[in-house]
Length: 130
Image (cartoon, rainbow, N blue to C red; front, side, top):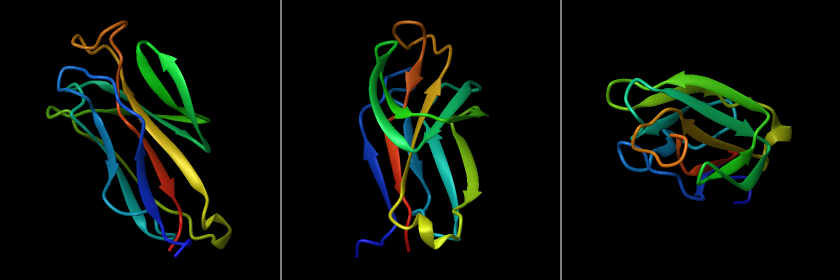
């Protein structure tokens, strides 16, 4: 029904050394449950900035699409395989059912990325629910 949790990919990423990085998650954002956001195909051993916000965006940045009107940035590091993740628990608050939050990762200093060396993932909408 309309209270179901969902993951919705949107927009396009910008290619780097391992192609276009991908942002996904290991589970739907169900209230009270653990979730892990997962970034793959990033530059190895790189700084990964995971953007979080309550609204999407559609702006151009360094030749890519900035897809989140972000209010917070998580600083992560990719491993030797270009993988990075952020784990947490979806808050167990009924008022959050039907609310969406938006995520996108940007990877700095990728020698294969055009412009100033930024690669980026798709956007990921996390629709909270049951």
